[in-house]
Length: 167
Image (cartoon, rainbow, N blue to C red):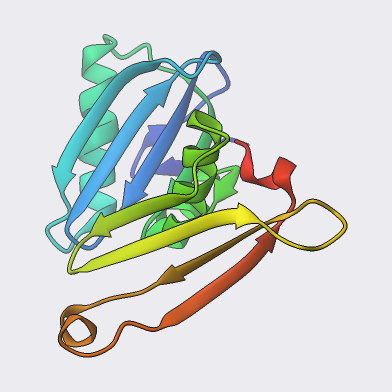
């Protein structure tokens, strides 16, 4: 799928682009088919995710002498739908799922991940469930400044098949 945002075109060769659009920062990463990091950008979102993503892609285009082509794209973060839909992302996932999938991909035996972003810390517990399908359950505790002073409580529990936790 080919999309654009203010004249930035994405095509079908040779890298995959991941974009994490958060309230504080926006991160872009280019990876090849072997999951090697080719280039990345860490930018302040400054309340304008469209402009910052455009700046990030323009910066990557400059690094690749305006010959950069994107064959696949995924987005996460608070701006994942806005940017993902505008650019035609193949994957649009929440941060918890992205962290759990990435952790299991890096180490299939992982059982805990701490996702830290903005004003929150989210412990993500990953482990085998008791169901017959051999699925994994992940639960997380969402904490913001108010919750840190009070009791943390689980707010997200999801059930995924083991293959779904792999990228």
